[in-house]
Length: 252
Image 1 (cartoon, rainbow, N blue to C red):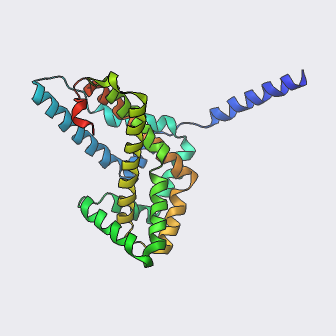
Image 2 (image 1 turned 180 degrees about the horizontal axis):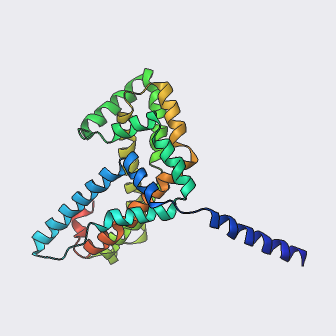
Image 3 (image 1 turned 60 degrees about the vertical axis):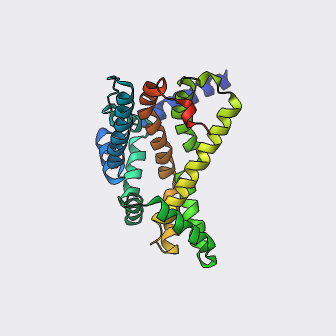
């Protein structure tokens, strides 16, 4: 019975250790939202989806509405549950580093022009002297917009939307897989261009340091948690509009 006693001790130890990983506090979540620009992004999401809902209601003479105030509430709930107090402490420390603050500020430039960013990225790709900085910028983008993380959004938002929309039952697994691949590819490319443009004023040395920051375990866990929180916050809204979503208008 020695093996049994050892097995039980390991289980009890695991339970004990997991109980020590307290969830992030509400105060920590608010600090994080402030230093990471997530507060502004949540407000923007509320505005965008409120507009979408209003347009649907106007087109259909429908007064049914989804309470958009639930989006930031659910986003906060998920982060607080998913990240421990220690992890959130490490994340907040990382976001207070000047280099990361500069990058986040550049990412959230209100005058960001996607066409200008794409043009800049193309020039960089054609400049042999910019190969090193381009490679570093792309690695930063890959760390921030990983395939698995982007897949969380597709699986939790786009799949329910497509399957519950009129005609959604006709979507086969092959089409769904292809749509998932295209969605991830599009999001990765968008993130790549945004990152290249956001780091245009960084030196190669600064890019190398920034890469180490975003590849740290704390920031990687934060990235996954944010994608998950976004999916959790928006899923109910996507389901609320799925029956009114004309799938034929959004298929290529």
